[in-house]
Every structure is written in C-alpha cells, then in structure tokens.
Length: 173
Image (cartoon, rainbow, N blue to C red; front, side, top):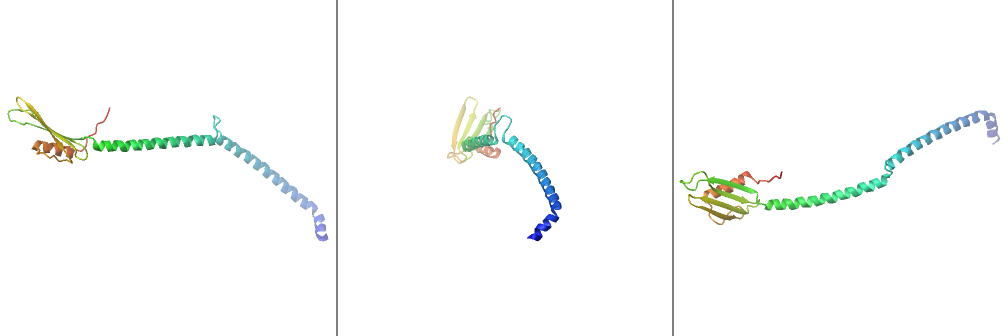
C-alpha cells in the first residue's frame, strides 16, 4: 500500500491535471446535453400544444371521435347503397319499343309494342294497335321474361330489343 501512495504522491500533479481535464470535458458534455434537452423539450412542447392551446392528446381524441363518426356514416351509406341496389334490380328498367304498321291502310308506324321489365324479367308487354277508326291496347304480363299468353311478332321483338339494349338508367339533372 505504501508503494501505491508513494507512486500517487510522485505523480500527483499529472493525476490532478488529468482529473481537471476530465472534469472540464464532463462539464462541456453536461452543458451540451442540457442545450439538446432544452431544444428537444421545445419541440415536444410545440408538438403537444397547437396554436389554439389544445394539446396533442385532445387533438387525437377529437380525431378518433371524427373517425368513428365517419365510419358510422360510411356504414349507413353502405347499407343505403345495398338497399338501392336491391330496389334497382326490382325496378322496371329494361325497355324495348317496336313501332309498326298494323294495317296496310294506316301508315306512319303508329302502332307499337312496348316491353317493360326488371332484371328478373318480370313486367309486361303493352301493344297498341292503331286502326283507321279505333285504337286498341293490350297488356300481357311477363314472368321471368316469358308470357303465359301468345305474343305477337312485334311483342317478341320488343322483348328481344329490351334484352339486347340492356337496362336503362335515368340520370337526374
């Protein structure tokens, strides 16, 4: 132990100088870390508090509430869309019109056959036959695209035309 104490006394000035250098380096490091911490705290303060004084937690809760409200609205719109699609499939949107001359003495294609049915083929075929002195209108039901009653050539053409042209959509202005 005496040897250690002797060695320390002989080199005390070097050891003291080394400890002073280490202390100064540590002091510089502490000052630098303090500045970095202050800068970081300033950034966090800015992040956690907006210009109106609200903090980030309140902003996140508000955002979460808005998101939940939007999800509910999207679900409601999805349900409404499904209902509208179901109704659209049942709407009479397949149309076929054939104009013709029913009699040789009445010209101008004033007679017509009109087929109107939904996506399943349920609807009706209406036939208007215009003569010189009268007009007769016949309506035949359609079930799955077929009628229990005999169809004229014009009525059959109207059904084929409705099938060929596809469903019509009405666009509102």
